Image 1 (cartoon, rainbow over the protein chains, first blue to last red):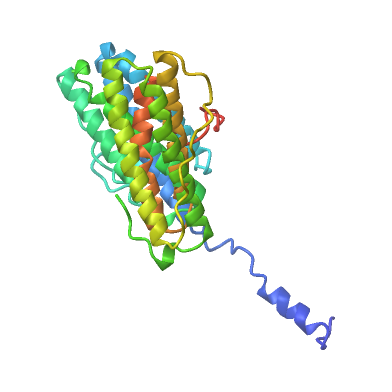
Image 2 (image 1 turned 30 degrees about the vertical axis):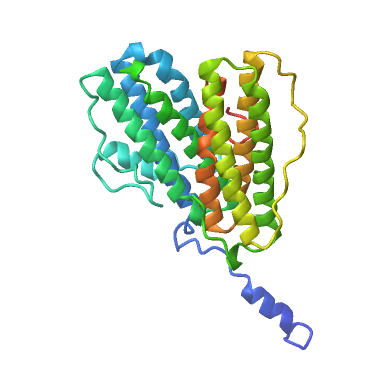
Length: 176
Length: 153
């Protein structure tokens, strides 16, 4: 048995300070970046879903909407690349798509958890709905900036700028 | 769109990032002068509008840098163009390229810990990102980042 002495006592104290994960305490809490990422993934996933539904209803919009959808899919891929999602997708996405009107999501997504509106009955209204969704998504990205790391803030800011350019595209009256 | 900058924003990194953004604005102001000469009437009017917006942004940055006690970087007498500009097509490409440069410079501000500068950078990069899309005729997924910066792009 190791007896405590002047030389071994610091070692024992150091070992005592090494507290490993407690298997009975459940998963460790998510970092702020990860919680905000889940919310961003949920919001981006909802935008991708909205574009696909609109394209399914109004195929003549494909030339204008397909490039924008591709960019949202690139956003989603980049966001997902920064976090290991649990099987079945992020909790926020699952909650928002399965429970329209619920309060899923965290980190101030603004979009996750909202009810998924029906596809409007006219092409112009469908474009307007996407435009509003882009504008809301861009604003939500900006609200995420303050609390995340610098590189993640840059990704959110870039996606917000991309979504702003989409608003301009969707403002084109020729789409109506 | 100008945040109050004070002691919390003091330091080399914020000033350096603001100076880089100002340098990008100077370059864009020069570049629109070159591009405008090659553009036809409607496009020239758009270039004039954008040139004015860059002058406004330049003045905003100049005031912000001065308020931090630094001397704002001056414009160069001339700038090396990234490619020859000899017709309307290359003029539009130059405009898009300059807007990309300005967007990139503002994105650098977003990496700073100061939240007011982050927000300023994020908002300030949106107009040049939109103008780049206008001149290029297409949008991009990640404005401010180099093309191909992400594997999924």
